[in-house]
Image 1 (cartoon, rainbow, N blue to C red):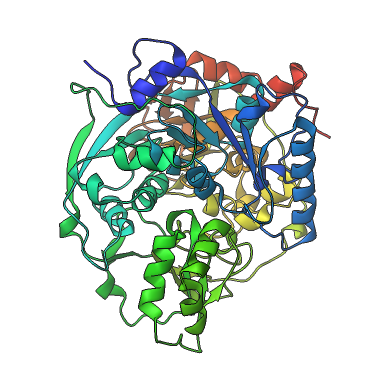
Image 2 (image 1 turned 90 degrees about the vertical axis):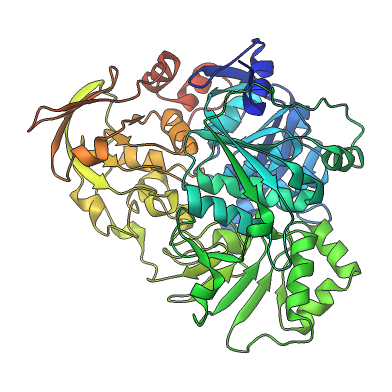
Length: 585
């Protein structure tokens, strides 16, 4: 039996003739991208040496330019790191500024057949170039940059054959919303895109699909190579590359066909894109306070041109705001030269510099309390675009509460040791619990203990005061979907013993390993337990038993290498012992 695109690249990076779903593989990393959120004081660990500095790229994009003093200090730390190791591929505030995933595309940093990692969750965007790219945890990025390698559990692959042509007013964001609405989450799976429609799809259109596949909780998303892709790369670099094609007899979890000509404009409603898409007509008449076009998914020249055509000769309603953010300064300049910026500004739009700002709810378009936004960005989680709770995406965004002061909480967090066998009280959570619900993006500058006091504040206020050390969380599918922020560390600091879910988002799971917080998948566990039940857990053996009934389920047992890493305290203690990073201050 042959291999899929993902399997073939992973096999090459391991030096093995073949890998299969379920294998734990250690792979060489070709490119490591650092973004500015890595350098935040509560996250940054000073690095003493890099494996290959020439493989590292540093981009200041999430808070660009910085909106506060903490951000200014963060950027200073990043610049010192660049100077320390002589990093050549550095995108500071200025001419070459942009969102990391757009810059990776513009500068051909992602080459076919290579492997790229970054701590931003939408790193899968680079899969448009037949490159295996994935968002990982910050400790993973540090490990890859200092050791030259990382680990993955090989997932099954879903093949999507794209056919037909898009009609006017229909975009690849609609294609994504169709997939998310029809098929739901793709946790622990890879998505492979190909088909006859590629002949009619630009790189920017395809990149929307690979970028947004993160919202499916896909591990990797990747396109077949074609001449359009190869011409893009050759126009931007002289580097040699070798395209990778799936084997004709590759084994797929599922084979799908999507006719782009059958698509209609869609909108995703709060608070998830998963099984939550409807025709735009369903949203007609909904009052909005803000509209946003931008982000790594929809801030290209094509997107800005489409927005300009919609508002040409018109004026934005004075009771609302229209924010446009190009994905890079290069896109901004091209849009300016084409007259697109003038059209947007004359219509009443505010065009910002390139930044992740509004999409992440940090600046340049943050929502107020009870405001609603329709947006072309990446996520629609509560709390995403403003305050502690809000939403964004090709849908609606609403902030429903004000901002309190987390420092009013004074209970000290206790960190449990890792027990392989224990008995614990159960807290129940539904499917699709995202990292913004666990830990708000507004907590980035707080200390780890302060962050822990904010856990589940948006959907279960006061929960942190009810939790007892040793309790466990049992949840439905796709637990931890979303960003790379250290939400697992916050759960650990609260004293939670482990998370057991029907399925766990791959990025969240990696951070569980990174911060030595036990987590495992167990089919049927959500139906077996109710909140308040007592569970007996054999984490090493994978047994989960309901105390009252005695019924036992078999969970997926973690590979020995990952169990060892958990027991060792996670990645940072390992790197400290090796003298690669400085001890925690």
